[in-house]
Image (cartoon, rainbow, N blue to C red; front, side, top):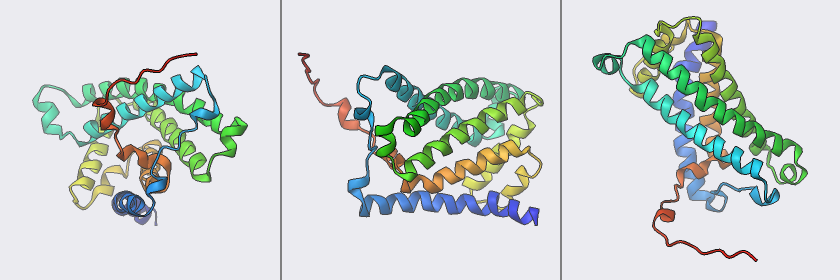
Length: 228
């Protein structure tokens, strides 16, 4: 039974989550364009330096983590070994970078979660999905940092390679992807599963604003704002 559950979660569910992520986002854009926004609550806590710092830390941290995972998981073994980088060295670099970016992001998301739960004006203007997604991201970061702690016990790069093989099998539509995560510790599996839950919830949350990159801001003229 456990084998079938593992096969579904790590070989089937990634495609379910990916399909919902892509087609759900397209449907949201087509049917609910007035909800396609970040729905910022900054105006509910004006002049808050803590909020600004936390927001910047969260956004910078999560972007660096996303692209770090993308490059780290999808880079073939032969490519980084070809430039003289061993699996253990790559794992150590990933642990250091992931730890720094993860702590930066965790600082930001922890403040934002506290604000959403305990600032009355923000809580009153929060949807259930807002609270769910921010809690999900917090748990995702916590398990991600937990994988770094576990990784200190085995620096040979083997587990990292197994996870990379899993991701590469998924994106290239090859069978047997679940076999690469059978023996990895539960914290890695939890981290992957929470990530797939996030992709599933993405189209139904305010995270869709990620698709709308404000390119026009780089071309527009400066706006002069005068203080009273």
